[in-house]
Length: 401
Ligand code: CO
Image (tube, rainbow, N blue to C red; front, side, top):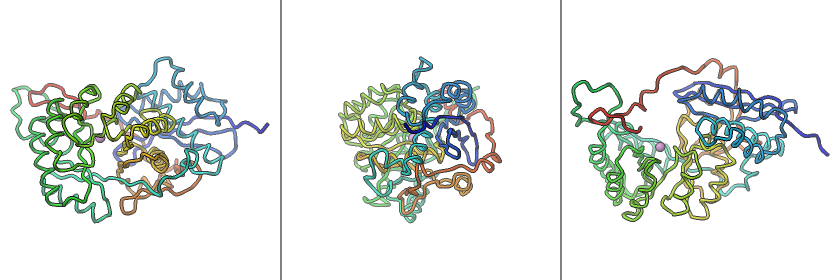
């Protein structure tokens, strides 16, 4: 019998080369020089993920056979008995993605080969256009079209919009205020304007970021129907999942959902009942490549497509993992892309590149991405109290971000 390669050490690297604190697991094996990388990025609570990996997962994993990805994932998920929270799922994802990276390196194959091979050469992506008014949004869309993007998300004034019509009560606290009803009026006008200006061919997307009351979200999905969005994202909060049925029965606007999900009970009924068109979990938040592969295969049976979450708080390693699943999945839909800065490409050699809106792999074994630890260490994470999640309605009461 061949020698078993085992987990020798689990290291946690935290770095902040741009806006987000990135958490990377480096899994060292008993074979000299062989290691894997995985994304465990939960930027708002990175200390908690660090402790979960270093204090709880590491002692549990040392000495285990690196080939047994499925067994390690299943056992890691229930070893704490309580499961499916964002902290533990991210910690498990770091290990899971690193194990897929190692298996690919051992097989001398990219991870997409291990999943079943390519259905496409590159993943089509969408970029984020924005502006403070509808004219700036049009300019921003045109800029991305010139760069070759075919799919463009359009936002105005950030998530929740810029609330002008605010009459706060005296003594109302500071916070990230927005007005849901005003949002509906302004965004409808913006989307109509952009579609009129740029024509029917470019695919437009919009993200409500779960900021509307359910009945307003149903009305908004109906109102934007004539402008033929590629998808409408996070029309509802996970707590309002039951309302998707109402959107579905009243309009044909394609619906994308899932970035906040971390429990199978959140995504399974939406797929099974065909209440959404795109499933878009944050892959580290759901526990890594292993569960994402299962969801993609499950969604394929219902003709629901994938659109994995891909903002700046998915690390470059996480984006590489997204891409390998994208290249394989028969039901791939679109990949969100955040356009990393030059420094991120230096810290993470092998970070996939976009040309004409398509995201390409580099065909190296495993995930095909590495980390320059010395350079990463020059950008330590900064502690801060998160402001943008301190959202408030016009009367000052707390709202979901
Ligand atoms: Co989103």
